[in-house]
Every structure is written in structure tokens, then in C-alpha cells.
View 1 (cartoon, helix red, strand yellow):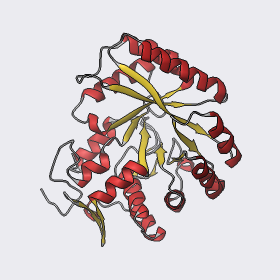
View 2 (tube, rainbow, N blue to C red):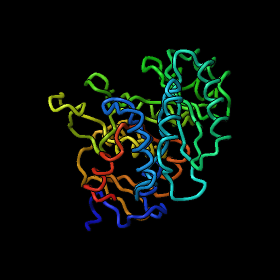
View 3 (cartoon, helix red, strand yellow):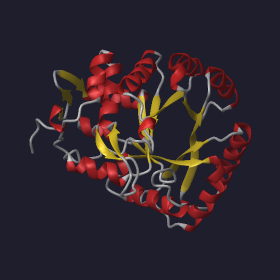
Length: 315
């Protein structure tokens, strides 16, 4: 195995190497959302299977709109127990809709039912996500969302600085949309880097969503339809490594070049860290970034990122 390319010497879940540290709990499963748009039963079945798979350590939360939590309960109740280890739980991140007060009440009732359930499969909503129009929304909504919920605000690009400042003041988290089903949904590399730079400067943790099915920046179809248009997509390794480097002091222009790196040979993972060109990030710096800053990304596919990681010999 060539240690000079984007590869790692181990295939373990103990985070003993830099690649495992970067990937641990990285992918929130969003099978209900486009372009997959799976039925609830399929999504629940998939999440259970991924939870039992050898790559379960890469799996994060299950993304479910609050409006579909009753549907989730029915599907979950009809599914087999998806865990082999005692005490394991399904961790849900719930998307709030147009009426946050009603949705927050629904989440509280849902968590109470799950806590009182006799089912051996534990389920809990532990984070919420919602789109906001401005910094005033962030301030108001933060006052009504219980502090025990990790809260991700998807903010408008037109006021990144003001909204991220409001998120920081509220002690909450930010959310970055990195793609979609059409080319215009993919933000420019400079915009992605600026968002992450502002978050790093304000100590605001963030997650990403949409368009990050592949590890490295590359051209793919925007949907799973055979006639779907092709276009350039951001890579999740690019995004999360750029975030970690920015947190460690990398210049924004250099981070933009990293975000646009397409060559697997440009990255070298080893036990102690990762090298990109002449820049080095330690395993400790990667761990710190993942735990407190660059948290996860939502993807409607779990198998597609895993397959690509295997093709790069990162798994």
C-alpha cells in the first residue's frame, strides 16, 4: 500500500490513525431527502443495517423532519431490533418546520414516549436543525429551543458574518448547504471557505448538508436519474480537511485551493496526521476539529461515500 497517496495503513474503529479520526461519526443519514427520497420504511431499514455494519463507526444521526416523526415511530416499531450491542440508541436530528413552537412540543412528546417505551431499541431526538432568514430569527429561536438540544441554524449566504455572530452569541451551531439537485445550489469554493473561516473565528461548530456524496471534488450527476445533468461537486474530505486546516490557522486562499483539490495523490494520511502539498495537520488537530468544530454532514446515501472511500483505500 502506497503511503504517499490518499491512503491509511489501518482499517479500525479505534481512531488510532488520522483517517479514522476524520471519518468517525461523520455521515448523518438523510435517506428521506432528495435525490434519494426514500420511503420511511426503507430509510429506517437502511439506518438499522448501517448501524450493524462494519462501517457503523462512520454513521452519525438519522435526519427526520418533525412532521414525519409519527411515521417514523410506526416504521421503527415494525422493524427488527437493529443493534447488536446492549444499550445502543438511535440518535435523531429533527428538522423543524414553519411552526417551531408546535414542533418543539412534538419533539418533547416524542422523546417522552420513546423513553417510556418497552422497546429494547432506544431512540431520542438530540439535535434540531432549521433554516432562518436573518440574525433576528436566530436570536428569537434560540430563546425558545431548550439548551439541551444541539441546534443547527442554516443561515443565508447574504449575511454570513451577522448570522454567525448571532449563532455564536446564542451558543448554538451553524449549518452550511453545500449542494443540491441543480448546479446553482452548489456554493462557490470561496463562499464555503468564508463560511468556515467565520465559524472558526467565532468558535461556532457547524455541519454541512447536500451534495457531499463523494470524498474528493469531482464531476458527477446531480441526481440518480440517468439523464441528470453533470456538474462539479464539493468533496467531503476537501471540506472537512479545509475546515480543520482553517481552524489551525491556514490562510483562506490556500484553504480554497485545498477545497478545489481533485487529485487523490495530493493527500497522504498516516498514523499521526495528514499532509496536503506542503501543509501538515496532526491527528490531534483533526480530532479537535471534528469534536468541537466541523461536526458532520448530511447525506441521502451512506453506501455511496463508503464505496468511494474504499476505492481510495481509506477503508
